[in-house]
Amino acid sequence: MAYSLNNTTQISKYDWFLDSASTSHICTIREAFTEYHPLTNSTICGIGMAPAVALGRGTISVNFNVNGKIITHQLKNVLHVLEAENCLLSLGCFDECGGHVVFKDRKCTLYGKKGNIVGMGTKQGGLFLLSARAQLGGQEQANIAASKHLTWDQWHRRFGHVSIASLQRLELQNLVEGFSVDSSSIPSNTCEACIQAKLTHKSFPSEAQNRSETPGECVMSDIWGPIGVKSIGGFYYFITFLDDAKRYNSHLSIQQDGSSGSHQATC
Image (cartoon, rainbow, N blue to C red; front, top):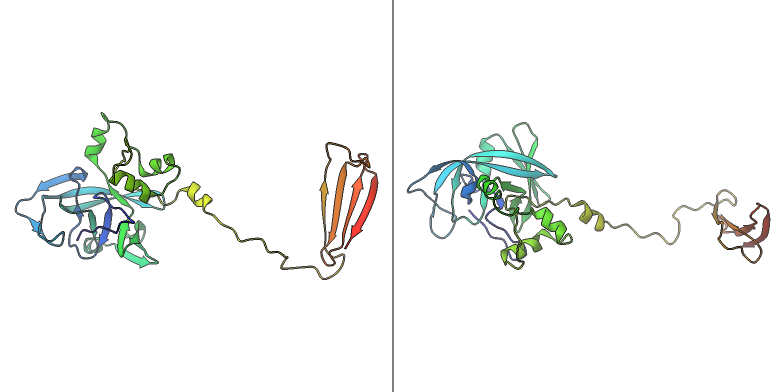
C-alpha cells in the first residue's frame, strides 16, 4: 500500500515507508533502478482504488541514515510503480533476507543478518517513515550540466535552522524561487546547533540542599580587584568571608601594598 500523511507532515514520492502488507518492495522513481526489466500486463492491488500497473522490476540502492552514518542497501526484485505515492520497503521481503525489525517508543530499528543496525525510522501518524533515500543515477548525470541542488540539511542551515517540515512545505507549494532540493538526500535529525539551542537546565534552588551545621566548618570567600580607580580609602582589593552555618558575613579592604584597611562584619 502507499500512504499520505496529514497536513502537518508532508511526504513525497522519494520517501520510504516500512510496510507489512506489501509482498514486494515498491519504488516510484525510474532513475533509481540500476538494473531494470520492463513488465507487460502486470498489475498490483492496494495502491489505490483500482489496480496499479507495475511497469518494471529491477535492482536499486537505498541509503539509510543511521545516527548520521549512511549505510547503503541493495534491494532486488523491486517493482516500479509510477502510481504509488511513495516508496515501500516490504517487511516480508526484509524478513526473508534474514533481517528483523524491533518496534519501540514510536521508532523502528532494522537489523541485518549479523545483528547490526542497518536502518531506522520513526512513527508518523501511525506509519513508520524510514530515514532513507534511493540513489538516483540519472540525477547525478543531469547535475553535471545543471546547477547543483542543495541537500535538505544545507537548506536547513541556509534558512536559519527552520524545520524540515517547513522546508518541505516550501518545496511542495513552490513558494521560493530557486528552491531546488537534492531529492536523494536524507533529512538529518541530529543538527548540533539545533540540539544545543534547545537544551534546558533546571533552575537554581533558592537555598542550598546541603548546609554546614557547625560554625567555622565551611567558610566561603571571594576576592574582587584590583580596581582601576583607587577608592576613597585608598583600597584596591575587597575580600568577603561567609560562614555557611551561621551566615556570618565579613569583608576586608586591602591596600595596594597588601596592608589591610577597614573591616566590617554582619550577620
